[in-house]
Length: 103
Image (tube, rainbow, N blue to C red; front, side, top):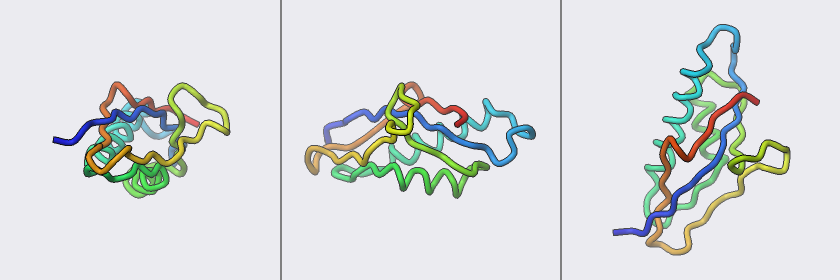
């Protein structure tokens, strides 16, 4: 079996209509979509935050999203692409490793 490396990050989003939506429900939907995205990556596949942002913009009622280094909110906190150490490493995550909030 492949070696697992856990990914942890924050997602800052801007909803399309923040006054007309249950934000907690939206945060959970975004979190679940991000988990699904990461957990479908195969062994040796890179995690590219830009691809996750594109998927979130295409599937969720949001106008922007940033994938940030966990626990940091400044402009320099954007998460960089992550590459596995070798072709036998697979990235995974879960709801405890991802925080979603408003920009």
